[in-house]
Length: 196
Image 1: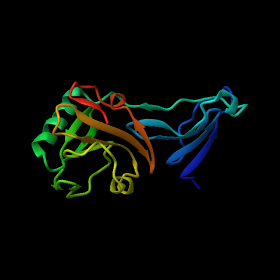
Image 2: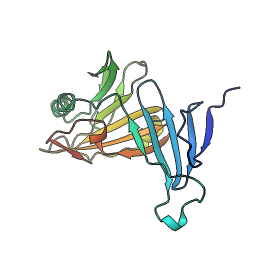
Image 3: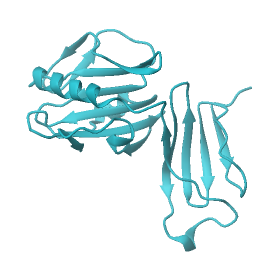
């Protein structure tokens, strides 16, 4: 029987293996990590990090958080998202980024939008990156976001879209385990956007 969750012990000389189930818990000298992979991206995120060398687990090797994407989302797509967020103001707007034929494609699904919420009108196939805007509010993840965002996906919030420079907060969800990412790891940066 396949396990949904498996465990890896990072002994010296051992490489990080691809997860057998949905994800792995990885025990390393410098902490505990969660590791997942699908057909589009691979991520290793910290659950707990040991920074003091004298507290590290002896006999194991250290690993580093990472995310591997086929390529970053082009700056032009991020600019389009910012522009459409401003046009939708004061309502929110939802964006999907799909990996199709070796490139990122921006999609605005059919949706119902309000000033403090946006909902897609239909279920979609797997979406690797989902971003929604906030109006003049900061780029934060709400308790509703925490409840809904529990797959293997990258999620983002564009905040304060009424300002010259927009806040952008990005995180990866590994089945409900969240790790914040600098947006420049996933998107090519633009001058109108800063990490939120």
